[in-house]
Length: 294
Image 1 (cartoon, rainbow, N blue to C red):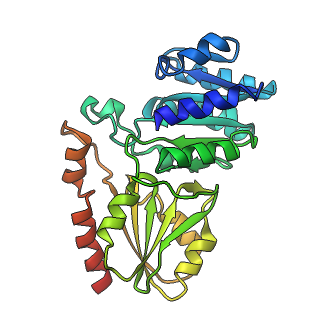
Image 2: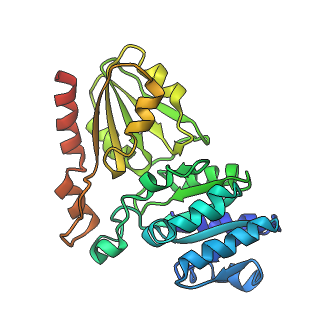
C-alpha cells in the first residue's frame, strides 16, 4: 500500500496547494520527487515524532492540510499525547498515515510492533480511524476525507486483499448473507475470513472504516442473530465496545480473534506469527464452527 500512498499523494499535491507532508525518516526515498518539487510543503523532520506532530498542528492552524507519515509505534504510541492535545483537543484536521502496525515489522521485535494503535486512538474524541484492505481502497478513502478538517488515522498494512471493494467512508460492506452468525472482517484480514467462511450460513460485514463505526449495518445484520465473530488485525477485543454500544441492550455472544494482549517475544516472519497466534483460515474456520454450534 505504500506505493499507492505515494501515488495518491503525488497526484493530489499537484492540484491542492494546501496539502503538505511531514516525514520522520520513513518514506524519504519514496517521496523524493515531492521533496524536490515542493520543499516548502514536503519535509523530512527526522526521528522527532512528537515534535513533528507539533509542527503539523501549527501548519493545520495556518490553513495547510498536513499529512504525517512514519511507523505506527513511533507515530501513535510515542506521540500519543501530542496527537491528543495538538489535534484532538484543538479539533483541527490532519492525516496520520502509518505503516508497520501490529507485527508487520515482525523480525525487528517489540520496539517495532504496534497492535495497540487502534485501541489507543479510538479514545481520542473526534478521531477517525480507517483500515483499508487494498491499495485502491486507500486511494478512494484518502481522496474522500483528507481535507475534511478532522484528525484521521490511516492504518496501512503490508498485507493486501486480492481484490478491492467499493468502499465509502463510515460505511460497512455486506459481502455475504446468511442466517446463523455475523462475522466482522476488518481491512486486510478479509481474504482469510472469506476462505474460512466458505460454505457457512453467515453474514460477512467488511469494515474499512473503524470510526465512525457503521452501527446501522451491524444492527440490520443482527436483527435475528445473537452471535458475532470479529476478526481484527490488532489487539483482540478492540472492537468490542463499538459492537456493544451499537446493539445497546441486545444479548449477544462475541468471539474475537485478533492479536493476543501479550508481548510477542518470539522472533520470526509475519506468517510465523500468524500461525503462532491462530490468525489463519484453518483456525478461524475451526472457531467459527464452534461458535455456530455453541
